[in-house]
Length: 213
Ligand SMILES: *[C@@H]1O[C@H](CO)[C@@H](O)[C@H](O)[C@H]1NC(C)=O
Image (cartoon, rainbow, N blue to C red; front, side):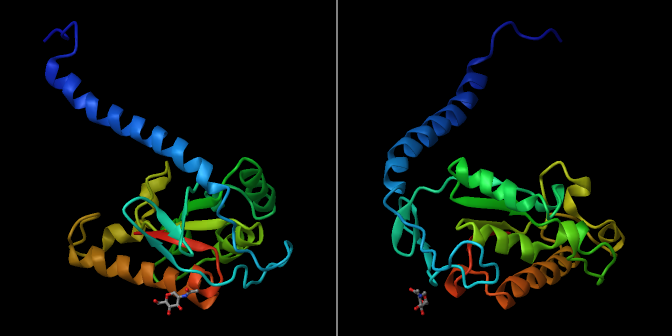
């Protein structure tokens, strides 16, 4: 069939919603950006300290309009830094550049296949030293948005799924499937416990303000 010369009315209607949302996003950004200067980061350590606590413990909530950090509405500018895509030596300068560029938050996925290359065998060294990365973010006075996945939509092999996951009997990815959910729960729990043990959540004086599964 020949392509139609102009978009049909239904296609135009379909476009309207994303355009409206984009506009809303920009307008909201404009109004909230001015408020962000008021919200101080609650840093309690001199920069250079690398083992925490990094902040006075604070809670994160939200209302109909905004995320609230320690009770204050905040406009948060977030920069994506995928830790295994650089070496640990490079992390401090990358994080510092994000801060210079105006970021309040570093967001990163967690890459399951890097952390559990064989079932039950975990790896958290070198480029996969997640705890070190999170502490460097905190030492720079920035917040962290932990995107645990377990699926990583980030041009990463197999969406971050370890290849062994494919061989679990009866598994179906990214859906309401018991074998999948069981493996996912094991990994997500592992990461959350690790962050908790290292006191990296905001209520523990750490930088993690948001977490996405
Ligand atoms: C955070 O919330 C918990 C649970 O409501 C509360 O016990 C704690 O005191 C709060 N912490 C701060 C710093 O407000």
